[in-house]
Image (cartoon, rainbow, N blue to C red):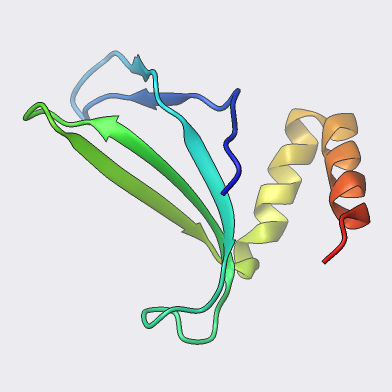
Length: 95
């Protein structure tokens, strides 16, 4: 599971007017079908947040293939050249 070293986690309550930056890592991975998603693989992003009670809350966000277009489009809006370079490098990776 690769770590996204420059990814940032910001947290805040729904009624709060400020966000706080967490000093934790974000990990991503390709995931296959599971009992909950019998036929669908995708990408998961995993992160941990400090919880109000003093512990840690683990969060995983699952992106099915149907969301890849929206993610790619937003990447292109943010940094077209960087996104194209990342896609090109990914295409050259051996399966």
